[in-house]
Length: 463
Ligand code: 4AD
Ligand code: MG
Image (tube, rainbow, N blue to C red):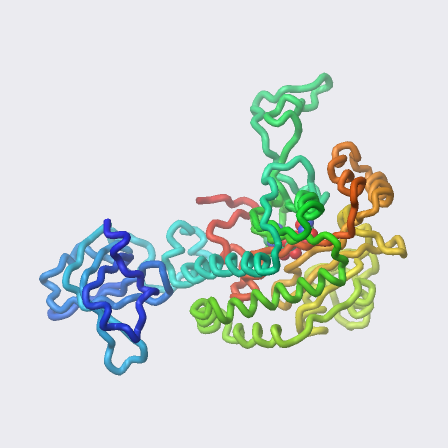
């Protein structure tokens, strides 16, 4: 193949067009139009949303009959500016070779497909403009995440995927086992004997890398994870996936207020990066998905996030006069209708809600003096709702032990987690950002299934 010789469409520099008198491009045909004297091919090579227009002046000379939409081809020729059209380039073909044919039953013909239909052909949809843009955007924003933390001397750590504990305590772990489901080993009394399973105990896919991130933060200072997490949560919504990517920073010697400054910096950094370094993608989203997108991001970068305690939030909701489906009551978790009211109607910008009731949050959050609330924070944004959940951690050994006992947890099983509090304990804080949720917000894409290449949701694990 001519892998190293080819020119990628995105690398072509308009102003240096004279440098492209003998170039080779490799890609997939989006459309073809042939007349007697001239043929046009729109070629896309995956490097950019823009197609390169290939012009074949003597159509008879080229194997155009074998080139349908979807075919992969290689084209040698020279580039020219297109008169009259701004920054537009076309390629005059001298040689066209077919790499892989595509029979005429290729499903992505030139017409609009719904996002629902495209999910059914998730193996081919990256070849559409929108999913191409989404996947390149994911890549750029992943880089932005690393860039933000690396510039601040955070260490990127890898938390295990296979774990033994449900970090969030929500009972949403997928089981990992090699036990034969048809003939599991049993204890006397009939219960399955997991001591004879692969790891000698019950294991599952991680729901969060937080507990391990805490261990590493209490050795390396500032750390972050960025990896897949799994939730066997039966939520069939446009914002929930069973497998999603989470970014989890954890900072030693850091309290909640200090972390909240970091959260706001981080979100704004990602927005700024998208506007500056993913210009092509943001322009596409603004043109095709949501015409306000760029303005929305710019206004958030300039505004301050709102801050409110859970207790204040409850008061705001009670005084709103809204007719919510779920009742508003101190002690109950905020439902997405409540979250959306706060961020969309009341504050009209991102809002950080802190100090939630202990009863509705995970065991590891630091207890406030009132003994009723914990140092938790959720960051809510318009349209998407919760994008971040985090907290200051309970670093006081006796307090943590007491809470775990109250929640009937097996302290022995978490001995390693308690050791961190036993030896040189420090105040520390961390949060989790759902990568797909922030991509949805940045792009205006309305369904989480369309910002991840191969979504896993209840009832679906295709491809
Ligand atoms: O609020 P969560 O459950 O928090 C944690 O897992 C903490 N251990 C994080 C930490 O403190 N290190 O999840 C964090 C974020 C949510 O705010 C949301 O953005 C995203 O992860 N998230 C999901 N995204 C897509 N699909 C799901 N099913 C999600 N569940 C959570
Ligand atoms: Mg949460």
